[in-house]
Length: 358
Ligand code: PMP
Image 1 (cartoon, rainbow, N blue to C red):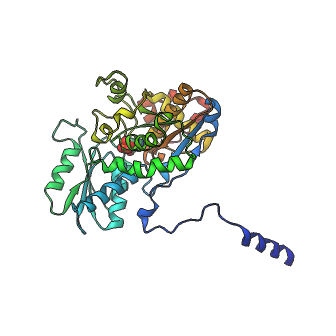
Image 2: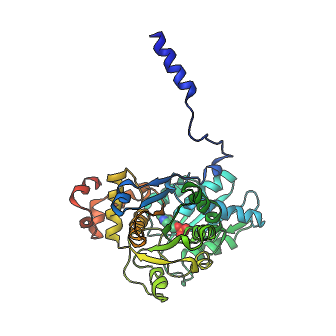
Image 3: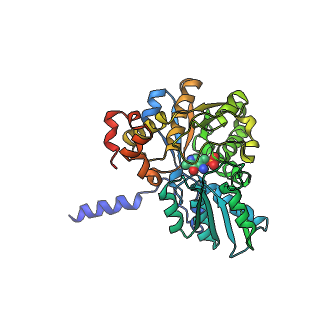
């Protein structure tokens, strides 16, 4: 008994963690540095490594924490906001959640305008994080009542307030030039052959593309992944702004070239349009095969990465983004009634329907 206890103690004393955890300066120091996860089954299927940045592991649960931190830091550096001020933003939800965390950590008030088509989970979470939330009718960008314009007007009506304007504020893209891109280069030892992701503001795609292309030139290919109903696939394949259909994916798709995307649109080598049926099937596959629980934009990105792998040929390393977790969409994506109403239940093979539990 005694000797056993001695052996156990010796083993503990020699154990070393592979990476020494840092002490972060508050919550915002915990944003970024997410793992790069190899999808084992999908990789085997396509003959290339499909590697995914696990962005749901950010404190606010999405890739948008990075942009939220950078737009607030940018406003501080430019003297646009002082202690006790208010950050106002128009967002489909994830940027708002990131901003709500960053604002609490830095002592700012947070006001969020969002289209009323977004999930209740996101609205509830924003309110729990202390943000003032205004769900407004989902109207096009050229309508003055669009959520972005309402956010701008709200900020203009207050003292010491800033509209962070994630779509056209290129501090958003800078977050990915300075963090996502370098992390991917370091995690792959520079051996990245392809990068693909969907865009909402375009910050993730443009910023990561910029950094990777600067490091590797044309040795890395960058593709856009788009849902139906967005104009970007049409723009990058034909130069025209056509759109067709719609999508259940939240937070992605775009009706215009945002300033963030405009900076680097020439770096995009190609584009895929991914139907909802394929995204939803992949969402359930990721859960079943890898234990990965992510939202529809992440699943869409993985479908696009597999298509890109087939296009580039075997033996490559393709990186994409798992933008957020499924937690914020579960009342929809795991509800039989909701899936049926969207005609998507049949996209899920019989053996995976055991996960449709709501
Ligand atoms: N996926 C989800 C779930 C999002 O909320 C967003 C941002 N709206 C994106 C992807 C796209 O990120 P970006 O704004 O950097 O293009």
